Image (tube, rainbow, N blue to C red; front, side, top):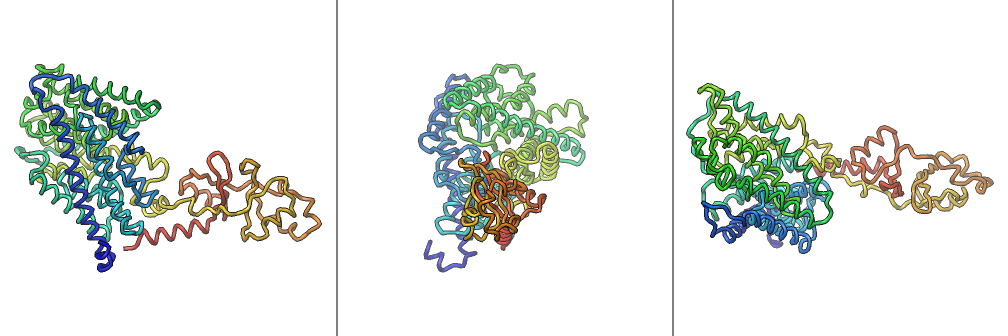
Length: 585
């Protein structure tokens, strides 16, 4: 590869790397699916379909515990919220992702899901694909902009590989990871998506994930139903996002790992006992609903539950599952397991669409009635669009998962309405909201993205001498004589910032040697116009300079300890450099 790198141009070699990243991501996606299937078969191959088994309640708890111990004692790093970690690496670490992420997420999520954890494998495999892209880029000393693009190639390849959905993989990178679509980035992303999809076709055949037959084509008269379903999906996405964050906060208050595991295991076991479809990823449940031509075919989902034999309560049963799925998924991850929210979102969407259509048809005339199976697809598109704030991904992912391209118009309607609905309440996706609150999120807003990529520590001047309050004017001038700066910090013995000295303000004293022992720093220092804290976001820092028309401001830690000075000139210089690099084609 090094020999090839010397023979090819930079752009040609980038295309070759994107191909390699796509192939590796596709292999990783299929390896994880195979691993999950092997674990499931090993644990449940002797179970009778017609009877319940207490091990269905025990297995998820065991899987979560094994995963938690693996993460704590083998990985020794937080590998949860995989997509959030990718977003953070793009905005703060210039695409650097730790090497263990190329395999650790696969092992942990494979164990969690294989044992029945109520989460999906997609977020872990996206993190794996991104880590593969980061590793390839660092092997060949790519610049940070190329490294970020290769991270996106790995992520898009992972989505394309796990779902056999190349377009969904491309738009995932654009909408969720928010990598700008330019000609220089489009072709490598397409190559990664196509190569990963080809790997999946080669290893697992040409069939789509969900078999779907279009028996009831969409007509214009059903647009009102699609609009209402879009609003419902947006609200369900909002519910899922808000409740997920609330549950994670409650688990976060429990510091002991084993107590968190016990709570998560108990919650998950109780929910699976009441609602068996919550066991595992839930793709078999989605297949049952998508292939249900009539409502009574979905009653198979009530097998082994307390609702068995009460087919009249099917819609109530499915509605309750929609409400508690978020508790099962978050209990799995917060209890120590590893998994993502792709599969839960698809699960929620399919059930929501099925229930909505069934209720809608009870009150509307025949010409306005909706197909429950079609609405399963619409619901999946709508919830995916809402949870991830990615309407294009919701549209193309469902079309590619099912082959339902003839339903693109209703998919577009539901996805768009769902996105608009949730955006009115929550401006950021479930993955990006944590980073957005801290000002660490890359967006398609060019100026905002450049500010996010800037690093305060890199532009802070830490080499200036510090002064003490009892220091005489003469001693102070001796200390700063060799410095070319005008601003100096006055600190207490423990390093706390007390004030600043601006030499321009005392210039009338500097050349009067008879006053050197008369004045002390304490009498000359002034409070700063404003103080920049190390935990301030870059937009906040820029606002402080603009509001006070300051040229230089002191930097302190959150507890007030002096760190250094930052100047407006250095900030603008760094901004221009990043903008230039960010905009190059």
